[in-house]
Length: 263
Image (cartoon, rainbow, N blue to C red; front, side, top):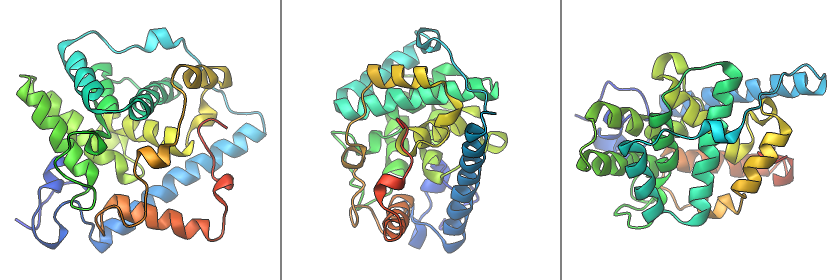
């Protein structure tokens, strides 16, 4: 079962065995991550040019109108997150949801808010309290997707819905997730997370609305909260690969030169 025909990052992909188990990447998958990063960087470069020329049409909305629906799935996802995640991780998860919804508005994408919120609020549960796997032992999003799936299925929720949530969580660390291939929930979760951690896509959102999100959910030390520490993640996993890339880039560019979501 070492060879699994499944997209990188999905739950099925994370279950393969052998030398590429536990989320470890093949060389071709590392190349794909690099291509994904190049794609989202090119989108950001285009936004930067349009913004400087005053040609970007930012999106704005009332945050109250973006609230998730009051369903049993949303409540169970939130309660689980609130039980195991600290304040900073919860704020990051909420911001990720709002960025995702606002970027959906910018693109006029329809998305299932119930699934998007559940995925966003739990997308880093692999780093939360009570975990039985450490990042050095397994890719934290592979573990987090399984942890989320086990909890929500155990609460009696529809397996197909939970599967979409778990796959979105597993996919979000790919750098870029295709809406056409993987659907709006997975695509927007990845864009929301990239926006919060790196500021990717922030120019598409009205400045006053960005300030409002940060007022409601202040940004702390994400590097510490997301455990972005060299040698802390299993070698060859996406987390380890991305941290190594970041460390290499710092040799030529100071961290202050990296765009942040609040800039």
